[in-house]
Image (cartoon, rainbow, N blue to C red; front, side, top):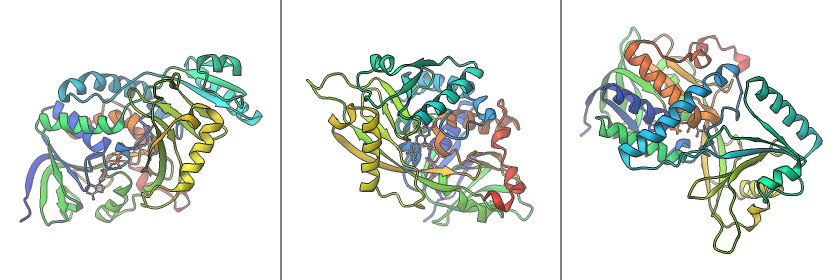
Length: 385
Ligand SMILES: Cc1cc2nc3c(=O)[nH]c(=O)nc-3n(C[C@H](O)[C@H](O)[C@H](O)COP(=O)(O)OP(=O)(O)OC[C@H]3O[C@@H](n4cnc5c(N)ncnc54)[C@H](O)[C@@H]3O)c2cc1C
């Protein structure tokens, strides 16, 4: 027998966006319900690289302007959440080496350095020998590198679970179920969510945060929401055993290869990641494993001596302009979108979630989220997808 519920806010999707939005709402005394079709953090939020960088996608200046705010929120979450839930989500500040192997790569790297310097960010240019003095695990192929110390990492599975548990402790409810539509009136006012089992959740505000599946809500809202999945596969390498020598303690990538190697505190090193158009297929492939190992081996000699613990797959929610939709759903009252964060949802998740809580409760957000404005859903030209 389906059970109907009543809540202040109904949230569809238990990924980082849904769970952090629930958390920030509960900090304001509001009790949301999160509806999750599979399991909390079962999507990309549970299997991401957890790297807090604003430089993995569009580098839109309006997004870069939000980076200090989201870094501040991450630092606060790293204090608050473990205290509330006992879950250490492994927030860690690490150094990062962006390397080049070819002449063209060196040019790309110089461009990256110039752009960051113009933003006032301290970057250090390193010769191959200087880079190898930071970590002995760089290969002889490296022609130059840049070191930064601005991009921390987290375990995004633990962060999402912890946000959900903290929200629950403060009165949120997590409900298992598939959202199939909105409780909507003819004049486009929404009063909650419909679930596949026939139950409904009545709420004053509804948030759609279903990651790459948010496109389904286009049929509910009456216009296309062009979010599609972009598959990403990653490898997890076990830390070195006794007698293996030191592990990696800096992250690294090669601008001309595409791969990256990211050590995580107290756990495996991640080798990532592919970008594949494979629809909603979440099967790991041997081709991806081979490609990732080959790329990483050109970068770091540590990779070939490490044991492969597991291969993971998840789906980035990709929009045509690589920018999420965060804010009121155009043409509707009571519906908000929080989806499409592509490869930066863990990084920008806190700012988006806190902004959504502000929009719902105060009618405005403390952050300038115009870069994520959902109004562009209505002005999209067919050519932009
Ligand atoms: C390989 C890879 C590496 C990445 N690395 C990083 C990184 O280092 N740093 C970073 O910032 N970002 C990274 N990302 C991106 C980041 O993981 C995503 O942007 C983010 O997790 C998206 O969060 P979300 O909450 O929008 O979606 P999701 O995590 O996908 O959550 C959506 C949830 O909604 C649920 N759902 C779907 N449909 C329904 C429905 N009808 N009813 C109820 N529930 C539903 C799903 O089951 C899912 O749990 C990476 C992504 C990939 C794939």
